[in-house]
Length: 473
Image 1: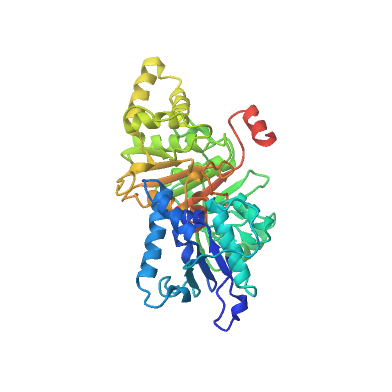
Image 2: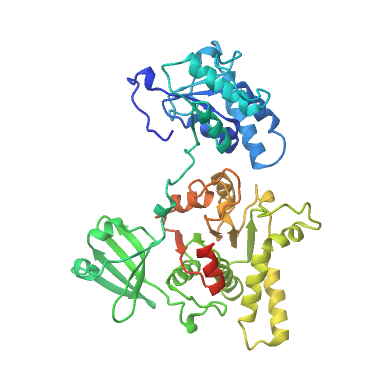
C-alpha cells in the first residue's frame, strides 16, 4: 500500500484490487487517493456504515462526512456507467492512477459462508470472497483497521492488510531523538579549519567535516571529555559545514528556572529549547516521570510572569479516559476540564513550594497569581481561534491524530509558542499506533526547521518506585 507508483506499462495482473472497510475511510478520508496505481472497491455496506456514522461532532463523524463528500464529487462527475470504474488521477491531482469501483450489483460468493450474513463485517467479507472468485487472476485484498476483521478474512483464505499509509515510521526506534553523541575523535577530524567567536555569553564554533553533513538544525550534540562534557546546539548546517552554539547550563542553581534545575542532560537540552525565544514549536517525548510537564510549566511561568514574553499560558489535552468514563461533568469549560488536569495541579504545587523564603502567605498569593495566568481549554472549542503572544501546551499529544494536531498548531498567531508533550508508549485512542500518532507525525515533519526543536527525555526523575514500575511492568 505504500508502494511507489509504477509506469502505465505495468500489466493488469499486477494492479491489485483493494476493498476498503468503513473504518479506513473514517480514519483517513483521503485514503481514497493513497493507493497509487492500484484499484479500490467500496462495498455497499461500507457506504451504509458511512451513512450511519455521519451524525455528530466527533472526529469520526467529521471524517465520515468528508469521505462521503469525496465520493460524491467523484460519482457526480461521471457520465459513463459506474461498472467501468472512476479514474482517480484527476481527483487526486495525479497522486493515484488507479480506478474506484462502487458495488453496483449483488455479489454473492459461490463458496458457502460459515458466518452469520446479517452482520455488516460479514457482508463485506462476502463481497471480498465474491470478488476473488470473479477475478481469479487479480490480487483482491481487504484493507481494514479492525484486527478481528483481518483475522476472519485470513481464516476464510482471503488477503487482508492494515492501512499503513498514515504511518510516519514503521519502527519508532528510528524516530528522531533531537540529540546525538559525537565520536571520541570528533575534534581531531573536524577541528582543523575550525573558527570560533563569542556573542554575549555564548560561544560559536564553525566546523567542517563528514559528520556535519548528517547534522540537523536545532539538534543537540554532546561530547564527553576529561574537563567536563561539551554540549551544543546546531544553529546552521550547509553541506559539510555546521555552526554549533554552546548552551546555558540549567543544571546549575544560579540558572534555575522558577526554582527548578535540570537533573540530567536531556532536561538541560529541553530547558534550552523552552527558554529560547527563537523557537516557536517544541516537542518533548518521554515516559512517565521524565519531567516534561514540570519543565514546560516552569519555563512558561518564567517567560510569562518574569520576562513578560507571553501574556498567559493555555493548556489543553485530549479527554480520553484510561478506564470507564464517569459521565458528564458539571460546570463551565474550565471546571469540566479540571479532573483531566490533575498533572497541572500536581506540578503547580511543586513549583509553588520551590520558593522556600516566601512563607505561607507569600505562597498563597503566588498560587493565585499563577492560576490567573493559566487557562485550561478543551480541544472541542479550538476551531477558528487564534492565540496571540501565548504559550500553548498540548498535553498527552500522543492521543491526537495528525489532522487534530494540524488544527491545534495552526491556532498559533504572532508571538505564540506551542509545546507538545507526550509518551507514544501510552496511546489510549482506538486505531492510533506509535507509528501513526499525530505526535510522531509532527516530530518527523518539523525536524530541521530553524524555529522548532525536539528532545526525547530518557531518564525518569519522579521516584525510584516510578522508574522501576516503568521498566518492570
